Length: 325
Image 1 (cartoon, rainbow, N blue to C red):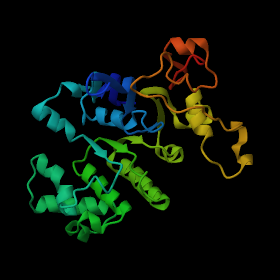
Image 2 (image 1 turned 30 degrees about the vertical axis):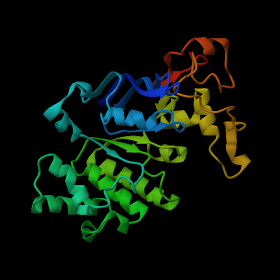
Image 3 (image 1 turned 90 degrees about the horizontal axis):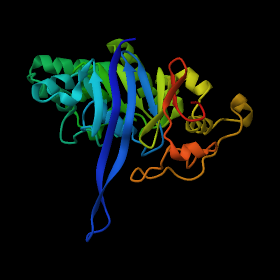
């Protein structure tokens, strides 16, 4: 497989002021900490984890919406962290994002035509008949009528607004798209429509996705591989069938076991439902050693002291856990 996006040692720390007014102290919030990730051309990599674990921050780092504190991100072999000016602007044509909130992501003062055409204008196109025809074509591609281009975002439902956001992201014909929880704010029936639309567009336009989500069922449906994050770290990456059938990291096991089922008899060989004690620790002061050791049911002495290295127990299955290593 051809590697399209490769991240190594990627870190993002946000400075946070603590200690009060008289004695302020700047403490780094470790949103993403030493993450290595590879995304192959044409695949959908699902990214899951609890709220606040750094998923959205990592997605924004990969397309350089925000600068990294450390590490390196390669897009098609080019270090995006070193690009500036015109070179960075050209690279941005190939990397786009679909935001989580379809209500907050669209400018309420702009018509749909202006919203979708804006990326074209930023990259040098003119607001002529050709650009308007391209906007109409994008609306058709995402399942909206041509007359929608003259209307404003408040005139549409949540699902329709997300289709507008998808059209805006794809109008430049990017190669890599970060889908930042694109269905979490939608009704369940609409979620299925948007997910199926994204699957069709990936095939039709030869796209590569990073699909960030909480819903493990949605991730299983759309993804080729799945990466699991916990407190700024990627703890497991595997092909989706292998991950759901035999998760190796205790955190992944707990996530999958927590998915509701219709009847206990349907749990099959998954055993008893795992229960994690406590809450996710603060990224301002993460635990030493393995960051999951404060909640892990299999914690050992080494987990509290030594950070586990990433190992590959099976081909293509990466795990950061002392139980596996």
